[in-house]
Image 1 (cartoon, rainbow, N blue to C red):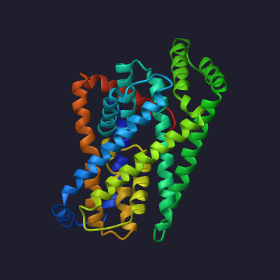
Image 2: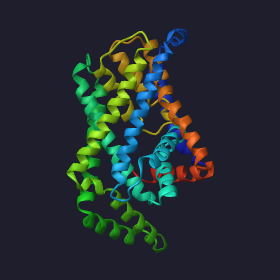
Image 3: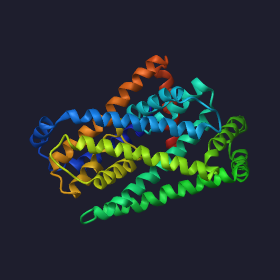
Image 4: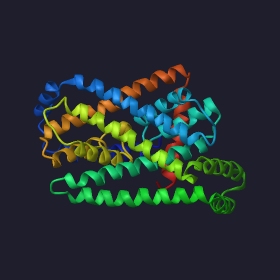
Length: 338
């Protein structure tokens, strides 16, 4: 089982975000908003979302091709199961689960798979920042908390990309450093497996050595998040408010940056709180902003999670396997800085 303090840390952060977002909300108004919503608009939204998931599959296929060529149809279940894992385990444990399923089915080392997933996350973060920066001029009376969040996230993701790019371009320098540190700081019985994992991780960063590959991954990441913003747009039509597509890009960027924080499973609070606050900035009534954000969250969470459960059964995967992989991610998150 996950360490108790990690569970309570995520639950505490989720509760804090929810308290901030739901302060002063009248539940009767929220209920009336949810009753009056036109839920048929969720259907095209879910369809567009799965196009974005397919684009994620193609991006991962592209990143992995230097390690092993894997047909897209064989990668789809691993991606869906991984996103289901993110939705039901804390600390984004689905990333390790996705790499574990890839190893189980395709014999790709977990550390190499995780390297490509880390590259995905860095590019996702950069695209989210671009969405935020593009949309900021449309924000009336820009709140100080939003400006500070953008500055912090810009430094974080830019620094991570520079670090990983250096590692990819100068693998021999990186290998010299981590081999020296492992041999100096790690007990002898753990050195060989750690060195093997680090070497596989270095191989997984191969796509960052090519400018063409970087452009392709960035372009695909942009398409992915534009498609997801289109889902936000479809779901908006189920509720009695209208904001610009740029406002929805801003909401998409902020909530997905916020979900990098520890939280309860399914990004409870860290998705909902910032989303509601962004809509309030654009003058949306709190009950409507809350109803929209909660329904959007459910529409993002439920379809991919149910499909992930189905693929889990089809692949004959056990919860014990998932729990072991998730605990590895949880332990790593506790032991190392993000």
